[in-house]
Length: 334
Image (cartoon, rainbow, N blue to C red):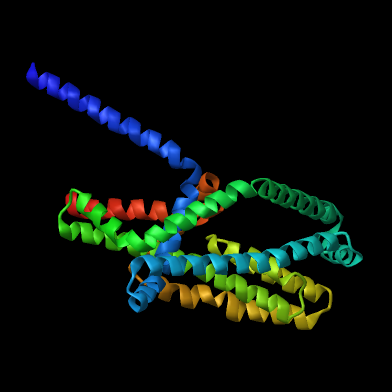
């Protein structure tokens, strides 16, 4: 009877803890994206925080300095890039109805004959895309107060990630019911996977976008910032890459008899933009954390659906870490 009462009390306690965890999740759910963003930024910029802390020798001040510096850089970049991006987006959609654009469509349509109304489909696609961006922009403006609050939560969390990050990781390690060797391997694997995804895909993708936009600027294409951003996003997605932007741009320029721009951007894209995939990415990732492209694609799309833009980073990281964790447990316990 005593044992039965004790088991009943334990069950009630477990259910109570589960209920509290569910409640805690719903409490932090509105700011979950901001918290995850802070953890990712903390991982990326922790080496900088370490260097600053060695100079100042005060964790609180060092965390405050690095967090404030990131806020300053963020607002400068967003202010400059957003202004140019909006201007170029408006310019692009204005050019859709121009005579030059119609001439390009007619030239391309000549290869398909009368069987396909290329102009109708392409203009319809561009109108739909323009409407989508207008809706996104409108929603963004309406949600600015909420986004500012989320930004504050992100920076506040980031400050403590810098200040107490190692202490928190140490406590999590101690709480795991595994021996020290296995714990070390699991955390090392998680670190390698996160590093591979952030530096091997995200930062390399950004580098490809910057080089692609620079190529557009050098060879006289319109809206280089807009297309640079598009290429940066596409470079992070497996099976696509930047070629789907710079190669058609080069072909269109050649069809317009602009041989300098057409040949130039194709050579630039081949030698400088796409080559990053083959040379820099393998060196950044190495052999420690090979991640299957399907995992990245599913994580990216699922993360984007669940968390919004930050899900581009979160989804693949979570899926890869889970697979790595299961693999490590399989090697040692099954």
